[in-house]
Image (cartoon, rainbow, N blue to C red):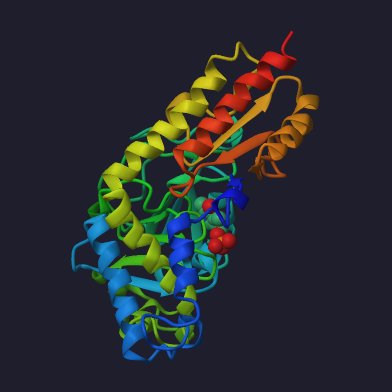
Amino acid sequence: MKNSRVYNFSAGPGALPLSVLQRAQEELLGFRGMGMSVLEMSHRSDRFKQILSDTRENMRVLLNLSEDYHILFLQGGATLQFSMIPMNLLRDSGRCANYVVAGTWGKKAVKEARREGQVCVIWDGEPEGFSRMPRPNEWQSDSDAAYVHLTSNETIHGLQMHWEPEAVSCPLVCDMSSDFLSRPIAAECYDLIYAGAQKNAGPAGVTVVILREELLERVSASLHALLDYRVHVGADSMYNTPPVFSIYMVNLVTQWLLQEIGGLRKMASVNTEKAAMLYQVIDESDGFYSGHVQADSRSRMNVTWRISDSKLEPIFLTQALRRGMHNLKGHRSVGGLRASIYNAMPLQGVRTLRDFMHEFREEYSH
Ligand SMILES: *Cc1c(COP(=O)(O)O)cnc(C)c1O
């Protein structure tokens, strides 16, 4: 099996750890002596309830989350959260929602929020071509804002926030879809964190929403049940049938992080090492390769770059593919190249890419 697997640099759904996939394979036909698959199991069964509560517990340990926070497993992707957040926290509030827009995902979040009420973009990276994150203290929120919304890692442009926001006087909401569980965070800074699982935490189909209990007091009274955070909290993420298999996979990934990796501090140090390898090749290439992003905002999850002669990019992709490196093409909206090196991308995969980048440059630079 190992030999037939390629290095998958996909931005999402992203690669999963091999040992997690193998475990899922072993347990696919019969889950731990039950004689049935998790795919077939009632979500009301004790075994599934155990999976759900273990997953939550693992996450609490990994993120050092206090009991003040609820952990929900929802559907609809991070994209539905673009709508659910303003539905729950902006609708009927008479307040303004503040958004920091550092890339495409932040922009999409604003578009949905505007349907629910007043939105104020308090920092916008678009005039600078989404080439950097805001610096600490570069934005100021309204003191009575409904909430402030940030995106910690802009997946498409390859930008990441490398500082934790200071406490603000209103709820702080963060889209962590593409760097969730990749590093330790100061969880107590945030009131709501959300992440589609398919970048770092598991497969597509489940979205983790972590929210502070106090936030529930602000929820609008006019919501449909499935769109109301209070309903999901009250039903323990089982108001309707949850995505049982996706949650089980998140369970395996969190176990892998705890037992094989040894926690988020260790994970972050591997991720930092991986990213540094690629940025070093770019920086030492005498302009053959160039990164789009300013150094202080470089993402450790999505490395984006170009080749100075853009005609070489398709050749780069073809040759990389031949060497077993897949999905290195940049997002269609920005072009260039992108290597997504989430938690599950092994060091060896990044070394292979680094060595190839060196060789390619030697062959094609004159
Ligand atoms: C992928 C991504 C999304 C969208 O996630 P879906 O689960 O496809 O809805 C939103 N925000 C960020 C930062 C992402 O990387």
